[in-house]
Image 1 (tube, rainbow, N blue to C red):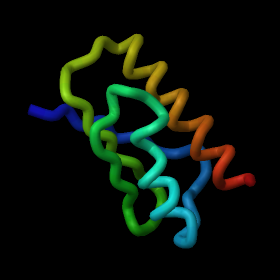
Image 2: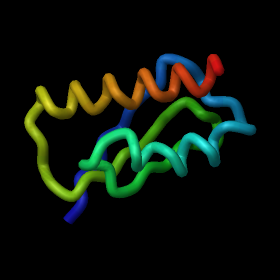
Image 3: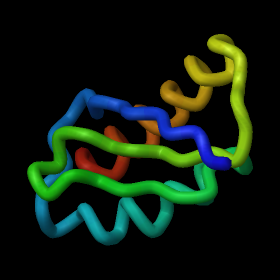
Image 4: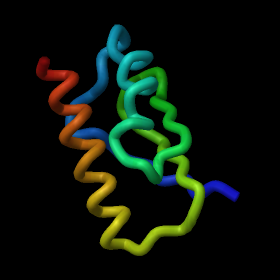
Length: 74
């Protein structure tokens, strides 16, 4: 059973980066087994294999936000 976590990125992900960011999100944290990004680039849905406590979820969201911001600004 996977657990889904929805993240609103601090920066909208442009169309041309959606595929690249989606493919690299699995490397952001070992807990991520799948990631998807809406076509509008305004939401990220992360799937993990197990339930996590809120502290871990917050840390995971922080990692995802930093990664996305770096990719969008880069």
